[in-house]
Image (cartoon, rainbow, N blue to C red; front, side, top):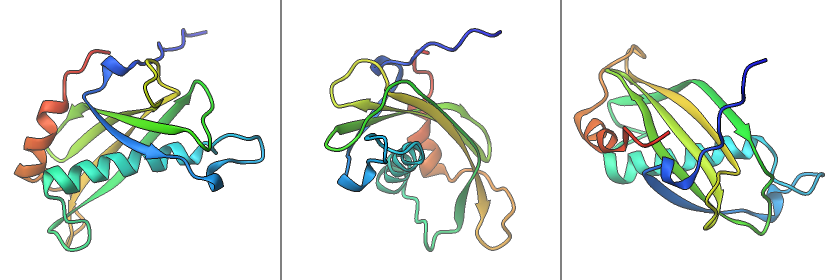
Length: 148
């Protein structure tokens, strides 16, 4: 049996975005449904790419497709918890980026969940892989190299 990877902490991430849970996030077990963590990861990363990297998701020349994802859950969260999503870049390729994310209860040192997803950037017209645009790459580069 392999050893479970260590639970990540606040110091493992370089950027944080606040997320407020909603009443409708709680499932029948009284905590946020597991699929919501992926939404929170996606929300934080896309906010970063749009606000700081200049991504135009509806009309720009490139699109980003998720081709792989995963999540490990350590403790439950739910309404009315205030959360923070930590982000770092695990790998930056020519046309792809591996985002590594974690959900923290606001102010908590250890992640309630941590995960990743891989974006591949494609030309909007051809849907073929294309290099990450310079402004996005420039925004991503400082997010590499966090402690793990």
